[in-house]
Image: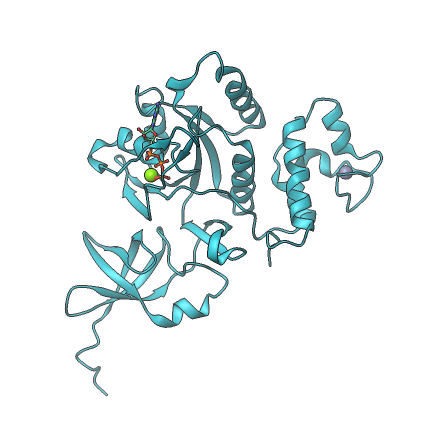
Length: 320
Ligand SMILES: Nc1nc2c(ncn2[C@@H]2O[C@H](COP(=O)(O)OP(=O)(O)OP(=O)(O)O)[C@@H](O)[C@H]2O)c(=O)[nH]1
Ligand SMILES: [Mg+2]
Ligand SMILES: [Zn+2]
């Protein structure tokens, strides 16, 4: 039977904008605004969003030049967190098919948040995405902020994570950040107000991303970026700017596996005398020893214990 003439052929594309109801899909050099075929929304019920930036999709074009996403191709990587708000406990995919993930923090307004960083790093390790940390607003380093911030910078560098100090205002570190983005598919995420969009504008002013203020009273951002966008990077590749996140909850993770995702703790895990050691109370635990010997920092060990407790509470941090 001949194909019905009103069924147009499928096109392969890349999702470059995700608003939750509309998606921009890049097909060749065109950008096609698309909706998602209804069944996707219902089938993937434990995810808050069936289609995200970085997804490769098949679309069917409609006569009015919009399109319908018919299929989402299997993802190579995902950056995920436990969703907050209305869908708390559900998995929120932030971006797909990225090979790099930078967590952005700021020196101040808002303050550096190591708990956020540690959870982000764990989730990047779980999904095998190379992670790094950008500490923006280096122009705000002063007598009060320098000590604590540089302690965190030194700690994460010692563990082996790349840490960039940058200022979107003075241009400090921007060339280095630009060269890190070049040739990769990167997601940039972090709390609201740390300067993610301002940083990307500094890398490429033609992006012209909207940026907002920070409440001086609460030292918090205003949630200026409202949906994720995937932007081309000069020299090749893409970078996703994403909306500010209040927290980065764990998903896809069982408590016994947690220690393996702390890079500097992992080498001591196999030296523990008890198989199945939780490394939180067992006498003679090699991890606890490593902490007392200064081989693992108190801060990161505390972070491990905090995450372990939250996973054990049976809250919905626990993965499938
Ligand atoms: N002092 C200083 N302020 C900066 C710097 N980078 C950004 N800002 C300011 O920080 C505020 C927030 O910047 P945005 O780029 O909107 O922050 P964001 O991380 O994209 O925030 P959301 O989109 O809400 O997630 C703006 O007032 C920027 O001007 C910096 O390097 N130094
Ligand atoms: Mg923004
Ligand atoms: Zn142990």
